Every structure is written in C-alpha cells, then in structure tokens.
Image (tube, rainbow over all chains, first blue to last red; front, side, top):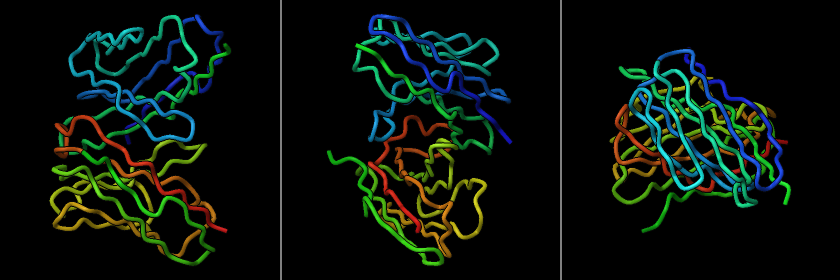
Length: 112
Length: 115
C-alpha cells in the first residue's frame, strides 16, 4: 500500500536557526498537505500543494512539491519558540484510493 | 462557527469492553474521517464517511467500525478492547470527500486508555 515517509523524526534547534522536514511517498501523489500539531493539541492544516514543482510561502514557512509529485519539503527560516510542535505531511493519491496517508511527523523543539 | 466536537474527551476502559466515540463535524461539512494516533505509529487512517456511506477504510480489524447519521454526525465503535487500542482517536471533517476533499478540520480527540 501507499507509504509516506518523513524525516527526520526529531529535530532540536536553537531559536533563530533554520529547520527543514522532508516527505517522500512510495507512489505519485495527487496532492500533498501539511499539518502542525502543537504539544497536547490536534493537527491544524497549514497548506495544500497540487502542482508539480509548486512552491508556496507563508511568512517564514516555505513548502515545496517535487517535480515527480512524490516528495515534498517544509522549510522554516529563523525558527521561533512558537514553531514548536510536530509537523506532518499527508499525501493523497488520485483515483479511487484517495485516502489521506500521513507521515509519522517531525517533532521540532526550539531552544530559546 | 463551532469546530469539530468529539466526545468523550477522555475515557478509561478495561480489556474486553467496547467503546463508542462521537464526532460532530463543522456545520455544513458532510465528510467525516477517523484517525488513530499513537506515539509509535503516528496518524493511522481508520475510515471515511460521506452522506452516511463509508467511502474508504484503513487496515484495521473488524473490531473497529463506524457509522454516519443523516445530520453528518459520526460514531466509531471498538469492540473487545485490547491494550494496544490505547490511543488518541481523532475525527476530522471536510466539505467534500475523496480527492477534492481539501483541508481536514480536526477535533480535539478522544483519548482512550485500555487497562
């Protein structure tokens, strides 16, 4: 079945450093979504990427979707303590098997 | 408008018992998905309902079941509970189902502990 791998599993940074998490799918995706889950909270939608090679920015966050639509990345510039949480990617295939498959997430901790 | 509401928020059961969890989606959302979240496995898809029909199902045993009512509220049931069923069960709603579903809106979750 479809697998979505996400690395690294954990990342600890000093405030002000950059952070990147990577997501790879075993199959071509129709679209990919990113979610953030704060400690003790629930996942909150960040963005959806649909087009091959797409790049979207949200303030300090930059999201990329690979040309082959099998990988994606989230980059945070100059991390802040408010960025702490687990970042999940979630890929959706086309066709009848369209369930959203989540990666296991990257837990980001930021040292002030 | 109100978000996704899940009840109960916390519950403790013993092995062999059964449990029913409830989810009320955002008003107007007709699609409800359920996920199991555990520290080791992340978010695992259980099932998705749209207009009272199960549209998709994950790889969980038959002890896990669900349904959706005409008002889009959904319930999931786990029978013959096992220790490994201890997890946070998350419900998510969206306007549409399938490949055009767009973003999911998650509830706070129901944390189940099986003793």
